[in-house]
Length: 113
Image (cartoon, rainbow, N blue to C red; front, top):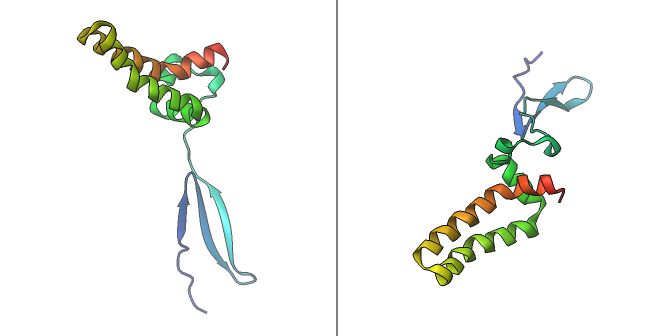
């Protein structure tokens, strides 16, 4: 009888698939759930949770048209500020556009969008 070596494991996100050798079937795949951090439900997301990268990324992945719009706002608003009031307008436009980018997931949740 040949000793069976430990089965190789393939890591896929939060699950592990083991290849186990059995005498009857030859080889079988067994799925085992691993530890994964739970994300809070978007309906109960707090303000501080909305500022986290993972939440913001998930929001903009679900709302791709809004993501493109926010990128355009972030790029264009400082130039609008330059035309309107010079260097102070550039700084104010950049701050407002970045704040809008970070706060959009929380605001849209509160507005029900």
